[in-house]
Image (cartoon, rainbow, N blue to C red):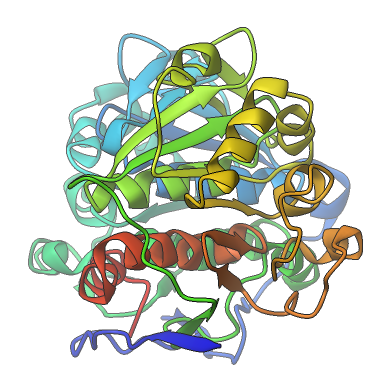
Length: 432
């Protein structure tokens, strides 16, 4: 057995700790805040998450998904002329409404994902600027991650006299309109800011605690399978090592279906495209648009019937209960997976999919694997289930939303090598 360790590159300027930094309250060991909502547990909170062309899809989808898990009603609003936005890395998201339709609605929280030019498109949207400025004037929560604290909130004058953080390359711009600090998540009064894709899950859990309380945040964060300490080294357990071959650029199929876990799908797609793999997103259904498990609407590149005409160096399945069941019921997809396995070509799955798709179709026979904790009792061999990412020859499996970045980086490492995986981990602020 080989143990692959991704020794993370050091971000010397980033003192990552698993703490939320407060400007006006004491810092505590966990993501804690100095107040909790009173009647909040009985009434759904109203949240606005704007999206734009050029939005970073991991940041948008993680924020939406985690907040919806808390019971909040999240309105995804496009600042473009159409509901559909072309996010970064070719990810297509369909919003629930146009931002103009939300201007008279009161929100408990407005949270801006980052990404460029998405953050600039936010800044240039007069309606969004007006809505967020009213939110601030009314003393309600507003938040932003990555480029958006500097490019949008800062440009609108909404960080004056406040401590805030953002993506490292925008820190100089942020310092001209706020007190710039290097924290994973920074809270000052009613403003919460964070740094990038690799900190967005912590950011989102922090927002749940702000909206509700510590108990609700813990309830939501448990099933996410977050790393105990952000930035710690993570391990990819590898058994029966083999080279994953491709002709120059890996051709990768990522099926999606109604009920697929949107965080897992988007992180896999986004990270593999950052690595310059050719990723085909195929809908296992009759429509290109799918409704994911937390009601995020994603648009595939093509239907599975069309995608099946191509050959792939890797087929990788996101999780989500409904999505995994749809995969298991798709004869075409199951046959593709069986041919992949018989040809000794790589295939993989995360969360519910190892247990609900691979196991019942004999695709884990003689293999070590892991899955979502509640699904591991369905695996015939449970000897490696406690590992976050397991590679066994041409198979890679993982556990859930909070292990999705490690899962995707493990794939990058197999095709492109450790230096490329570390480079991406650093850019995404996933590592020390």
